[in-house]
Length: 304
Image (cartoon, rainbow, N blue to C red; front, side):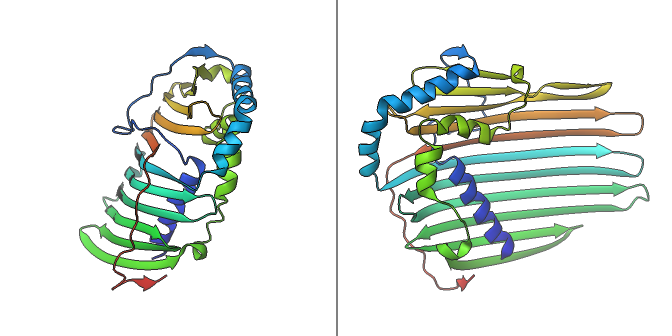
């Protein structure tokens, strides 16, 4: 049960950082293409500040008339690694997918209908020929409405061919999950005006070497690309890119869309050691029409 609750917390905190998106979410593992003019970081700062000043009064009126914002969520995270030394061979793979809709009201109410799939594979082979192979899977549907969260999940754990499956149905008041998320602060500070540049810095821990960061601006978008290529010497290197695109609402300093794409590969090799890994991330959390979320039949649910 604690594992399931942890997943809920992870997903909700992730949405709290990037509660916006783009309609084009069919393939979040597709590399993004920048639009507009390549600029320096000072141009980005000036752009977001000027946009805030231009639309401040009209945005205040829009904000007063806003009740609940709805978003269509599409998130993928894939990590693979393989290493070998004199005593052990190790292989790991994990995949997380999140799809669904989330509604956030300005007074802090939460509504959602989200499906989560998590898969993990772990293989170890030791020099004494001992092998271990583990596989873990989670399929869960999470519904939140009327102040409650309902979790319907199936957890499968397999170790060296021994498989165990557990079905879990739990319900809990949203306030008892201990999220500590201030949705009003997110809307007004992170996703408005100068908060756009803060958002980019939050989502990418930018290296001090600014030569590795490219910025692009057009009339409505701020695009950021971080070059992850590094040559560590000998047979150790890293290649890849991480991208973010922030799109403003029309004639406003409020954010309409945030998309992300990342693909980073690492290779390291020496006389007695070999290691390779790959990380792919992508998300698009898209604004959508208001949805009606209905609580499930609570028969079989336990209080968390």
